[in-house]
Length: 182
Image (cartoon, rainbow, N blue to C red; front, top):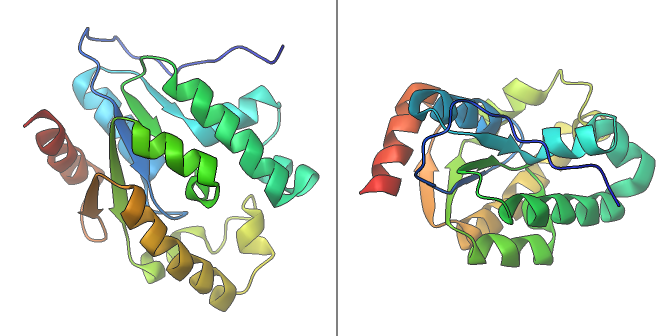
């Protein structure tokens, strides 16, 4: 039996909102999840942080240790476990949509918001991040190709596409909250 599920908790209200955030590395999913959680006094889970805690390492180290294929299976299991809880806000890893099983789970889940951020903004945010194997082991051109390949998949999985490039986390949180609660 694996480690127990840990949820990042703020004082929780009774309403379950179920907002799932997807997008490329550096899109701002974790920051936005924290912002939403703080503004509305809800809990959230970041699947990358949870995966790292479960294996007592960073997701980058885990990715390097087990390879991308096995990492995607572990990521799917973490997503499955997370979605079986009543947590209202979930930030996913940028590659969660690489797995067909994860895509199916997301499509069956609550409301999925794709943070659509242009590549240059994402790259500027992640270029110096040595904890991301796909960044350290790829050229900017290779990352751009991956970005382009994922775009249509994000669009296919998402309930809502949020253009997020020039908006603050607070603005994005307000936009998502209005879409989710209207």
